[in-house]
Length: 326
Ligand code: DAH
Image (tube, rainbow, N blue to C red; front, side, top):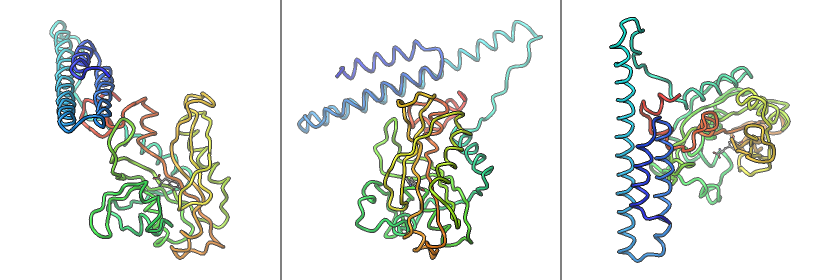
């Protein structure tokens, strides 16, 4: 493990040497990860050592972020001053561009995905980020003592209400209140207690899909998601592997072989399955007559794949400097 101070110096030097904002961001993320990973040493230290290491890591992160802001500022200033130099030389050059707002890449990808599902006949519904325990768990066949509740560490608000841990909670709402058949998608934010790192965030985004009709088979589900992947990614191999979710049976994980590299680089983009008969029954739907298929996809994952973004936290920070790159 490198000395933390050395890491900070190295990172600052490297950031200063870069000319493009996305290069600087990449250096920043890499070194922040490296600095954070030195916390692994914590377990072998006594309490004074732990305190020292903790404050060193905090200090290092602050120093990196401060330098990052400075470098971004100076890149921006340099770009503007080059432009104004150019303009002062010739009055025939076109006027300087006025900065305008841009759509966040997450929003753009979400809209694109919604557009694809709409062409397949799905309509968009809205759920609620504050959910009841029953919609988020019990009505999805996740009983009180089920391990699935531990997997998704929940932000509880009070006795029965919580921040939804997945958009699947919308399934419970829709099945209880809608006429059959059902063909809906629900995009939205979800929350889990996570230690944020480059691939995990405590707030992220999903698109849930639910289709309930009389003659629905697993092959419909496979065909539907394969078609979505083809529309979204272009020609790509899609893999379905058995998985477990209490609310679907059978259940599968959906992965794509990204950039056509078969058998390597499989990237999971979501989960899916046939709606469990218990879930239909709890919503008052006769499972002998009606069948359902459901899926949930990570919008952050789709966005990261689309734009080759390596750190999910960049998506959540906001700020025009990040958005301007797209
Ligand atoms: N809710 C699951 C999750 O957050 C994803 C999921 C899996 C949704 C299977 C579904 C499904 O609708 O059928 O991990």
